[in-house]
Amino acid sequence: MKKAYLVLSNGKVFEGESFGARRDSVGELVFTTEMNGYIETLSDPCYYGQIILQTFPLIGNYGIIEEDLEGECAAAGYVVREWCSAPSNFRSLYDIDTYLKDKGVVGISGVDTREITKIIREQGTVNAKICQKIPDDLAEIQDFKVTNAVKAVSQNNGRIFPSFGDEKFKVVLVDYGAKRSIVSELQKRGCAVAEMSSAAAAEEILSCRPDGIVLSDGPGDPAENTGCVDELKKLFGKAPIFGIGLGHQLLALANGWDTVKLKYGHRGSNQPVRDLLGTRTYITTQNHGYTVVPKKSGHIGTIRYVNANDGTCEGIDYDGRGAFSVQFHPKTELSFGRLDSPMLFDRFINVMGEGM
Image (cartoon, rainbow, N blue to C red; front, side, top):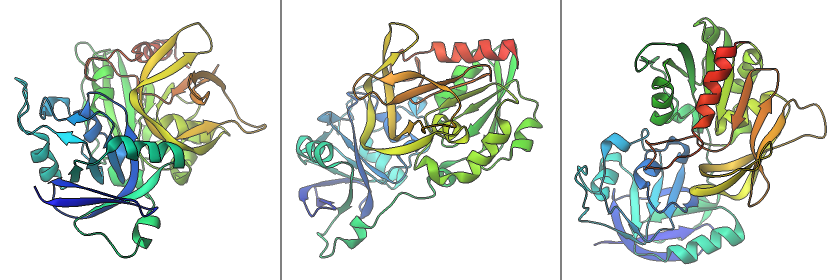
């Protein structure tokens, strides 16, 4: 194995071994606490411009299963304690090193992921560089910023996905970095899905005469997407809307809320979320670095879900407007066996059935 280095923006250097693509890469270093689901993590467009650090010590045990990929890999790099070169699973097609090489993603293994995670938790999200030689100047790392993220990952091919079985509803999915599982969850509930680019105008979306609109998750700073927010203002109240992740944040911005960056974000499959209208707490899958916060006045909607750890907003209801949104991923069986609040898709179906 060839040497590689993970250099943090504060000057801290970790020596390890190179795997995946053999090149240098700069990104925002973030950690995820998932114990499995690395396939979904690597193929999540929300990681655009970010170097992913896995806190679980052994990654790649069951290889790469292409049916479980959520989208195109957009990560800037991958950091693990150890990767498995001999995966064991009857569905596996190849190992994780092959996948990273194919996607041009640089990886580093053999570093102390626990120490790095502690640095991020104590200091907040830092920039980093995976490289073959320690740089003399940290300016490139310190000056890095994730920009134009949605534009980089949003599809613009106008794909149509038929429903599984009889068609009951027609849904427009606005793609800010959509995961494949969102489409499949809608399809099996009798929805034909028309996928549209994040750049689509409100008039274009409404011309499809949709029964409902889903705003997908996506990467980057939500406040950067001023054009998307302006179009959502025109869509609000015209059709039922379900926002997920970045879609939740953009819908909130369109209705007078603010967004702020979290110290180190919520990334993992063990995030507790409380429903304020009941007594239940859901263990959810999340991947975001920003959260919605209310203004002193002028915002529309009521917080429905909160993070049980830090009290941040995890969902908003827009009563009487046929709209609601959540920060977490409402995923089901496609998502490595988890059952994360599938009732949210059912709720959206019921809202469409009621109409505006």
